[in-house]
Image 1 (cartoon, rainbow, N blue to C red):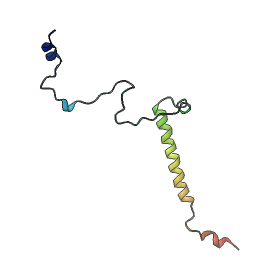
Image 2: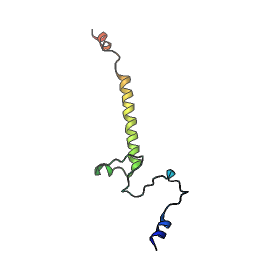
Image 3: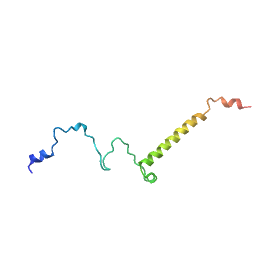
Length: 88
């Protein structure tokens, strides 16, 4: 095959619109697009079989922390003089 015929079979046609091409990723060595990659320590990774399990546990932890913050605000005294009237 001559160099000229090889170029013609491998070159893109003028009607191809390259602006609309999307990057596709394959394989673990590719970077993740639009996602954050977190490396778990081996002991933590043993507990979670997949990303969904990690996300579920983290969402639960977020809810617990938020609920504790709300209940701490409710239990907090409004002023320091509340206990003063209880002294005989």
